[in-house]
Amino acid sequence: MASMNRSQWGLAALAGALAWNFAGTTAEAQTPPGVLIVGQIAEPQSLDPHAVTAVNDFRILMNVYDGLVRYADGTLEVEPALASDWEISGDGLTYTFNLREGVQFHDGSDFDAESVVFNFERMLDEAHPYHDTGPFPLSFFFSAIEEVEALDSHTVEFTLNEPFAPFLSNLAYPTGLIASPAAIQEHGGDFGRNPSGTGAFRFEEWQSNTRVVVTRNADYWDGAPELEAVVFRPITDANTRVAEMLSGGIDVMVEVPPTSLNQFEGPGFTVHEQAGPHLWFLILNAKEGPFADKRVRQAANYAIDKRALVEDVLEGTATIAAGPTPAAFSWAYNEDLEPYPHDPERARKLLAEAGVEDAELTFLVTEGGSGMLDPIPMGTAIQSDLEAVGFNVRIETYEWNSFLGIVNPGLEGKGDMAQMSWMTNDPDTLPFLALRTEAFPEQGGFNSGYYSNPEVDELLEAARAATDQEERARLYKEMQEIVQEDAPWVFVANWKQNAVTSDRVKDFTLQPSFFLLLHDTVKN
Image (cartoon, rainbow, N blue to C red):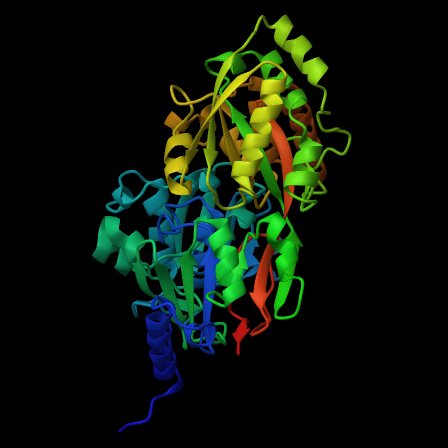
C-alpha cells in the first residue's frame, strides 16, 4: 500500500474525527491532533465575504480568504497581504497597489489585478454581470471608489471621488477580502456555499446546522498553517457550548458566558481575553411609537441600570458605554462624555413631560449572536428596569440569523427596540452605517431605528473625508455629543471578548479586530 503524505493523513484524520465527533464517543477520539474543533455561537449566514455582516461568519472567512491588506497581529494597524506594497497620491484620491505574483485561488485560478477589479465591480456596479449574486450590505465601506483599474497583470489602481480616510482600514475588513472570480462565475448565487479564496485554509464542506470544515492550504503564499483542518461547529445554546468544552467535544469556545468563565480557571484550559472596539446597545424606533420623542429615548437611557448589567449580569467582563463610539478608539473617543446614570426618577419625569403613560413596548431579543454578550438575561433585566419607570414591555425572542433578518430591514411595524452589537474597525464604521439619514434600511444601510439629524450627517461626511487625524477626531467627538443627547440608542456596554482553549491548543490568540486567525495555531 502506498504511504500517505501529511496532507492525506490530515484529511483521513479529519474524516475519523467527524465520524467520532457526531457518534458521541470520548473526547480524545473526537479531537485528534492537527484537527481543531471550534464551538461557534451560530450557523453562518454565508461564506461569501461580501454578503455577510456578522463576526460569527468573519471568524471563518478570515481563514479562507485574504485581502489586499490585513491588520498586523495584535493591532488595528494595516500591513501588506495580497498587495506587497502601495502608493497614495498627494491628493488622497489614487491608491496604487502592487500585487504578489504566483498566488492562486483554492480552485486553481490565478490571483491577479483583474480578479481584484472583478471583486469590487461586482459589489459596486449594478450593471456587473455577477452583481445579482449579492446582496452586499457593507459595500458602503467602498462608496468612495470611483473606478478600479488593472494597470497591468499585477498592478491595480483605485480612484476615489473624494479623500476617504478609512479606505485602507476598510480594505482589511472582511468586505475587502478577494474571492475567486472563476468560482463566482461557476456557482453564481450559490457561491456563498462554495467559497474559494487564497487563504491559509481551503473550504472542504458545509453541513447545515452541523459544521463547516476547512483544510490546510499547503501552498499558502504566507507559509502553510500548522493545523491540518479546522471544524467550526454551530452550538447556539451557551450552556451546551460550555458542556461541550468541559467534556472535550470542542477545543476552542468563543464568547464564553460571563457566569461560566470560572469553570475554566483550573488546569486543562486557558482563558483568553482581548479588548477591542465593541458596542452593545439597544436600537430605539425613532420613526413611530413612544421612542419617536427624544425625551422618551432619554428616559430609557436613565431607566436602565447599566452598572448592574455590567457588574452583575456580565460579571465585570465589560465597561459601561457612554455613547456610539467605543473607548478602544482612544484617538477619536470623547472622554468628556459621561454615561447616562441610572436615575429612575429622572426617567419618570421625562415620560411625564412627554405625556407618555403605561407605554406598550415590543422588545426584540436574540438567543445569542456575535458580540451579543448574554442577551436573554440582559433582556430580562432591561425589561424589569423599564417596567419600574412605567413602561409595559413585551419580549420577542429569536434565533440569531432570524433576528438579523427581522431587525436589519428596520423596526417599522415590528418593534420599538432591539438588542444589537457591533465590533468595528474604524470610528467611521458604526455611525456611518447605522446613524446617518442615508443609511435607512431601504437605502441599504443599518439605521434600523430611522434616526435622522442633518448635523450628524454633515459631521460624519466631513470626518471620513478629512485626511488629518486630529481634525477627524474633533469631528467624531462633536458627533458623539449630539448623538448622546439625541439618544437614538440606549448605550449599554463595551465588551472585552473572550475565548477558552483546551491545553492541547497552543499559539492561539484573540485579535482586537475580533477576527479568529488560526494560521499559527497548533493542536497536539
